[in-house]
Amino acid sequence: MQNLFAYVDHTALKPYTTWDEIKKLCQEAMEYGMASVCIPGCYVKRAHETFEGLNICTVIGFPLGYNSTESKIEEALQAVRDGACEIDMVINICNVKNKEYDKAEAEIARVKEAVKDNILKVIIETCYLEEEEKIAMCKAVTNAGADYIKTSTGFGTAGASLADVRLMKENIGENVKIKAAGGIKTKEEMEDYIRAGCSRIGTSSAISMLLSHTGKS
Image (cartoon, rainbow, N blue to C red):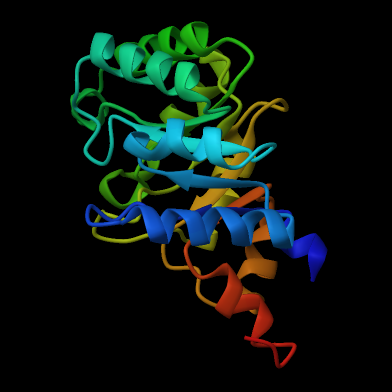
């Protein structure tokens, strides 16, 4: 069970999330040994100052992705200054739908260059992409030097699917890991995604998902 918690990015990204909810999320992540908390950028500095040793992730260009590259870079740099160690960025889906894959790759590369050794996860929002586009983004994420490819924001028309994770596994480079997010609700589903190749699971339901099997709450 502890091993499963170690895969979790404990997530709270609703637009009305309160500081009390963020504090609870952070406390849970530390108690159960989760990989990180994934929280809105406005809470990063406060969480960093309140919870020593907590691994903090935040999102940029979220959830639609069509912000300018320059704004994504500045947003990422500010997050790092505030204490984030991991950045989940949304690709420019417009570029992908226009088949301008080189532009999407160049943006990822620029953000990765900006955040340096901090982990960059690239959300490709699979629900909006055709198979050819998903494969192209696997190549782009690999070529740009990002650390992870991520399925979904959780705000699109659908979340993660095992089929998409398997497609990613076949097409990413050996240095790229996979994060699945959106719609994973049970321990069994989580285990299926890990077996398919995921190194991280983004969810707001980790506690209920995993502790329901132990009789705890």
